[in-house]
Amino acid sequence: MASREASQAPLEFGGPLGVTAMLILLPATMFHLLLAARSGPARLLALPAYLPGLEELWSPRALLLLFIWLGLQVALYLLPARKVAEGLELKDKSRLRYPINGFQALVLTALLVGLGVSVGLPLGALPGMLLPLAFATTLTSFIFSLLLYAKALVAPASALAPGGNSGNSVYDFFLGRELNPRLGSFDFKYFCELRPGLIGWVFINLALLMQEAELRGSPSLAMWLVNGFQLLYVGDALWYEESVLTTMDIIHDGFGFMLVFGDLAWVPFTYSLQAQFLLYHPQPLGLPMALLICLIKAVGYYIFRGANSQKNTFRKNPSDPSVAGLETIPTATGRQLLVSGWWGMVRHPNYLGDLIMALAWSLPCGLSHLLPYFYLLYFTALLVHREARDEQQCLRKYGRAWQEYCKRVPYRIIPYVY
Ligand SMILES: NC(=O)C1=CN([C@@H]2O[C@H](COP(=O)(O)OP(=O)(O)OC[C@H]3O[C@@H](n4cnc5c(N)ncnc54)[C@H](OP(=O)(O)O)[C@@H]3O)[C@@H](O)[C@H]2O)C=CC1
Ligand SMILES: CC(C)=CCC[C@@H](C)[C@H]1CC=C2C3=C(CC[C@@]21C)[C@@]1(C)CC[C@H](O)C(C)(C)[C@@H]1CC3
Image (cartoon, rainbow, N blue to C red; front, side):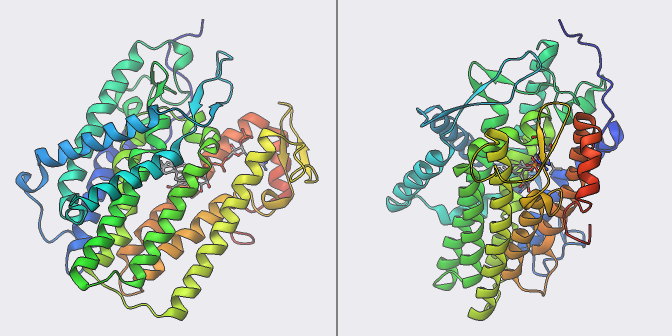
């Protein structure tokens, strides 16, 4: 049986001090963005003109709405799935099973919300509730992460994540001790990663669009683009739901505050920032510029989807005709690394595509404010850091073969730049 002693994995995110700062800074940044988007000057780098009081943040209605939303998404997750996929092999040689019905959940949610709106559900009131909703979600994230931490105290050692078992309780609370916390077959991390926050983001955007239509007669072209682009991103994530099973979050990271808060609060309330900004700061957008932005989005999506699908197909079946002709490097683990196709261009072509899409989400907001570019700036930092973490893990996993890959493909994300 594996030992429950603290692991020797190197500390990430600046160790206990770094994660303590992030425990405060992540929620603070989210509230700053929510307040800045609705303020007149909409300044990213200025302190908010006022701090909301508890009566503006705390609302039992918002908490109830959050629980109804979570309950609905749990119910849709539990519906029969068109497919049940197996995850990668775990430390104890077992494999977990995951329902593939995320896209179905998105469509059913859209039908239910559509039905609700047709009988008078005031979706346009949602933008006015974002602050108390974000507060309720933050509180819920803290409590949920504490429960997960307590659950991990009685989990077998083989169920712990490599990085969240340092022995420092704040650090482990943030990173997450247990790799795949479950209640029966209900997988908390997998559920949270793709459902309530990601689908919630789309409906917050839609509510902002409807509110704009109510205020100004019709939604602006910029608002349509932001809604369309981000709906495509979420729809794509749920359509290709199975591929999330090979991401770092599922196979390596524990489920702690970072991912709980990231999935449930950070994604819906900060990723909808462009739509929030546009509601309070309408931006003119001509057709030629809109077409150019659509082209940028299309290029980004082409790279993002091409790279992710190529790797997933190759990992599932290296002799699939679409990847069989690609050049590879063998590794001591028996797995191979692609060195041609998208993965021969840079070592993270999927990040490049994602970043180009992030630019296309901000451009409809014009160039007068830095605020709508927050996502692009944060996402660049997140992906540069994520790339470095992945690089360390691949070096540990593949040793000399990884060094050979780095020699053959010297750039990380942007060809000839980085
Ligand atoms: N919008 C958002 O907020 C976020 C989006 N993302 C997106 O999520 C997606 C997944 O990202 P992420 O989980 O970080 O990592 P990746 O999907 O890039 O996976 C990295 C893994 O791919 C495998 N790999 C690396 N190089 C090769 C190669 N040459 N040939 C074959 N396999 C290789 C390795 O795993 P192995 O060899 O074990 O298979 C490596 O650990 C990306 O598109 C990213 O942009 C990520 C974070 C946040
Ligand atoms: C510091 C901080 C804010 C940490 C939290 C990070 C999380 C918000 C992100 C970590 C990895 C993510 C992924 C997606 C959303 C953001 C988080 C949770 C993702 C679901 C977005 C849609 C993509 O298509 C994806 C499925 C590839 C992606 C997976 C990773």
